Length: 80
Ligand SMILES: [Zn+2]
Image (tube, rainbow, N blue to C red; front, side, top):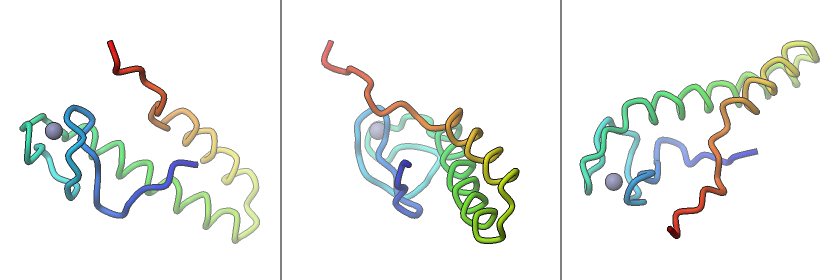
């Protein structure tokens, strides 16, 4: 599972590390949708843990399916 640094991200354009904010501090890329997706991912990870701890397997599986759908690809080839 993707491990998120709480409230810190790497810009998908220039890789600058920074707090979760709407615009990249270095390249000024618009990160609003990226931050929204990170928040949703973070929330879903907490929901999976809570569902697992409470023994709610149906909710756990449903949230894990959402996480699988939402998880950003990490193997993008940027060498071209
Ligand atoms: Zn950037």
